[in-house]
Length: 198
Image (cartoon, rainbow, N blue to C red):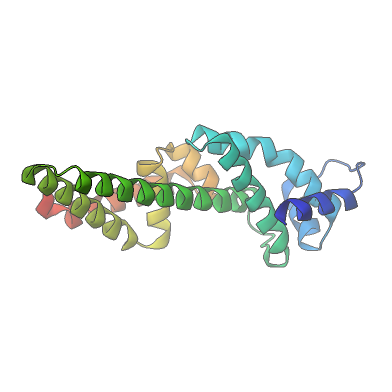
């Protein structure tokens, strides 16, 4: 369905379009201009795909995430804030969906590991270690989830996904100093939340 929607949008768009800057494209896309949307897609499609693959997403999954991100831009076009970077909005959508994908795979892998462990009749101390690791992971996720939204987003990108501060600043459309401040506060939050595990 999403693939058909993209094809339809592109078919409706003319191939002849003068180069527009991102703010101009954002205004036109907000107003339902198919040609501007196609130009925006052509400009960032490959760049976004490579960005996701570089972050450890499998190529086919990355293609799906890119498509979903562009479809969401088109479906939510009337809500576009033309004062903000549409490119950053696109990357935030793709990045969030990538995190969700990783989280879902991680849950699946953890369930498979636990199931395998229970069928192998491991020693008590090994099971105890597994439980401690599981408890620590829950505590980490709880600490991250308790952070304010922007701080949480910065921490996940810099610490978990290993984005550089510069990359994070670019994707979130904030200054590097802002990223540094959020990371400082996030690490302080984590130290406090995980004190008993040290």
